[in-house]
Length: 376
Image (cartoon, rainbow, N blue to C red):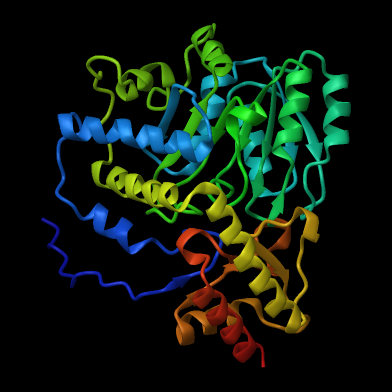
């Protein structure tokens, strides 16, 4: 028999998380997660799920009936949208201006779809004119997929304009809002977004591991009229709908992450209490403070001001500076985490997050002071 390992309890330090995610979690959210666990079909928990659905609808600004929290992180939210909508042979126009547009491409291919790529440089938003050219050249396209807030670069694309183009060309839109939800303007119904997914660990400042998603009536109709089964049993929304439906008795699908859903309920309740527009403005205000301090230190942003995410600030690493050594020193001396560059920006940029609870003055002040000290 293998001997039982003996370890002390794990006691993590109190880090200040200013990377690309996870973000600092609200103390109230951590407290909510520690409440007693109840059964996932307990009437009280079912009532909480109804409230959670309404809170997700508010955050997305949608009345979509099929609005749920996938019991897995944002990457599973992405897969939920693609595996439910895209069937073998479906043509999908995918916009790629960073790592997560590339992941969309891979999802389409795994679904057996036909991919048409629209590429833009890293750090640039998706170009609407190039997307329109692709839509005209591919009148049989069924979907347009793009990342609203590209976490790998800090670029913000025009979701409203892109979804309008999709509608004009009879395409359903699939939108990555992992980093945008709660941090910048996002209006699902008004902009005509058909399928959207996000994550709990970014601007919602909740614990990682959940993915809010929403499907428009047109997207739901596409799911219901599929000619082939959804390739993932766990993510099949025709099964999950019965679990999240508020009408009548809920059907058992899987054991929900009860305590994590408590946490998401509290994070979204805090967002609703603050008000979406107030939250969007707070992120802009904190970005301006950070921007002024970084530029004073001579650091240059990857993304032009007009397309820059306030909650994800990518800055070039100065010549001669050791990327890993700086991040290690920030972590060890200041308990401060900032993010490394990803993909084409690996070793060339840092990603500094101002997300949710982390978008506050004391975090900005600490980050600027620590960077100035370490870069000396």
